[in-house]
Image (cartoon, rainbow, N blue to C red):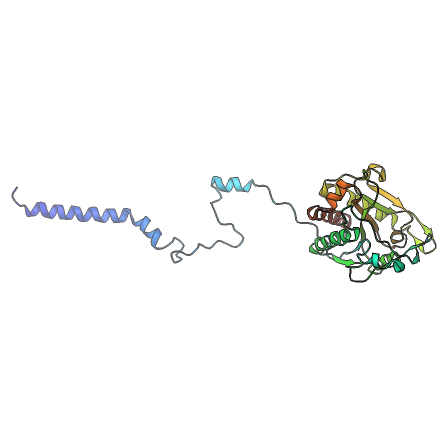
Amino acid sequence: MPYDHRNTARRTLALALAATGCCAALAGCGASQASPPTGKPAGQPTSQPAGQPTGPSPQSPETRQSSATPSPPPAAPSLAGRTVVIDPGHNPGNFRHSAEINRKVDIGTHRKECDTTGTSTNAGYTEASFTLDVSHRLRDLLAARGATVVLTHDADRPFGPCIDERARIGNEARADAVVSVHADGSAAGHRGFHVILPARVREGSADTAGIVGPSRELGERIADRFAHATGTAASNYLGSGTGLDVRDDLGGLNLSTVPKVFVECGNMRDPKDAQLLSSAQWRQKAAQGIADGIATYLKG
C-alpha cells in the first residue's frame, strides 16, 4: 500500500492517547507502592490514634467477630496494705535438737512441748521440708498480689521457733491473717485435707474470744479454695466431711490475738496422699488454694 503521511500522523496520535490513558489507569497501583496514602515513606507502619487498635475497619466482618470475643478474666484482687504471716510447721533442724524442742512452754490451757519434729512419708520426705516448700510458694503468690508477707522462720535457725513464739510473731506483726502450714501423720486410709480452727478459750494467758469468728471465716474460705485448686477432698477422718476441725490444745492458736488457722494439707502416712504431697506440681496447687482462700477472706 502507498505510504500515507496523514494516516501515519493519525496512528501516532492514537498511540500517544492510548499510552496516556493506560498510565492514568495504572496510577493508583503505582502510587500505592511508591508512597502510602498517609504520606509516610514507603515501608514504615501507618500510625494509629492513641488507644485505637490496628486491624480491619469497624464495619468489617473480622472486627464484628473479634468484638464478640469474651474478655479475659479479671486480675486477682490486690492485697496491698495487708499483712499475712505464714508459719511453716516444724523445722528441718528440730531432730538434731531434741532437748530444746522438748522443753515445755505455756500455751494458756496447760504446758506443752516447744515444738516437734513432725512426720514424714514412708519414702522419707519430711513434713518440715514439705511445709517450707509450700510456704515459699505461698509467700510468692501473696507477695505478687501486693501483700506484706512474714515467715515465722525460713530454716534460718537451728530449731523452732517454739509454739508460743510462733504465735507472738503473728501478734506483733498485727497480721490480718496467719496460716500455719502442716501435713498430718495419721493412719493409712485416712485421706484428705483439713483446716484447724481455734476453740473459744479463756484461761491463763489464752483468750481467743476475739478471733474465733474471723478465724472460722478464714478457715472456711481456705477450705473451699484449697479443694477447688487441688481437686482433693476434705478429710475422711476429721471434720465430719466439712474439712474444719476445732481444737483447744494448740498453743499457736490459743495464744494468737489475730485470725489464725492451721492447714493440714493431707496425710503423709497414706500412700495415695503421700504421692500428692511429694509432687512439686501438686504443692503449687496447694499454695494457690491457700493463697486464694486468704485473698477472698481479706477482700470479702
